[in-house]
Length: 427
Image (cartoon, rainbow, N blue to C red; front, top):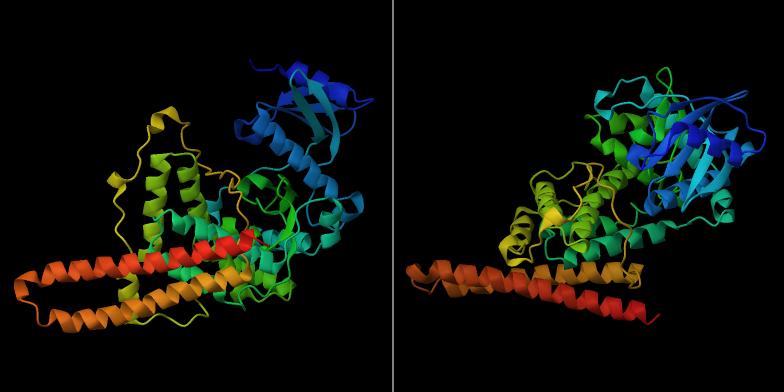
């Protein structure tokens, strides 16, 4: 049952001592339906009251409060935007009401941006001021702190899990492994990052970012994570923001762009694993189609500084990519699951095994390279043998050869991954 606006206003007076409520109105931008929200007018500034509808929403709000707590009053004065201040929390039945200062502003549609938009300079300024904050603020608050190598290993673990589903195209897997092996790509200084930026997290006043919301994922990590949402913007927008950002910092824009696109592609791996973990065939099918799209149209910046594959290597990789027979996979009745969230919010990784190390990454890539080399040798031998085979059986022989190469390569890589996992677990 919905809670009345007057009840929420009363909760504000309970949570905040000496608060006098003079009026109340519904909050039009509140939490995508996750919370019941109202704005309470007081004799001072307006306050926002949020009452989560379930435990998941409660946890997200609690994380947001913790993230904002790390940004002290002195720190906020250095930022190019406003951050809400938590005023109080009070119990209401089995839930809690959160009261904070109200930030004025409106959201915007990312599709309305272009490379010349006035707003881009403000977005770059917001990211620069956030990333320039001392990492100690985050560590002192008990929030996650990751090194550049830890970020690389985390991505490698995600690639490993996606590949083990058997649904990741071989060409995409190969490209991701090359990115993981590129030491220059991962030579960056971790920074304070928001980690969940999108248009819902930004408030705009007069073509400028006035406030930032949703600090529940605040951490010290790869600054590229805060640019990923711009990959969905019209062509040229991401590059324009990165260019303006690079003018304010000493970060090389080429490497930043490459990691941004790489992290963006990994979102599809998360989507695939979300479907597998929840046994939702509709999500799995969607993820497979999106991943196949990366084969047909890879991002131009994804391999910017890498040695391009030869035509023969591309052909071999495509030969080793097994066709996905969705009919052979377990099917589930998706009608019994919740309708897909258009925002595609992914569940936390429930994997409990130890993450891959840098040595594991190199071992996996070496195994893949060795499998490709073996496939080349097999292909040459098979070509000689096939020359002596009658024409009417050549098609079957070629099909068997391709299947054998794919099975051999997959087996070699899987065995190496298993060995790496065993070694990691024993540490």
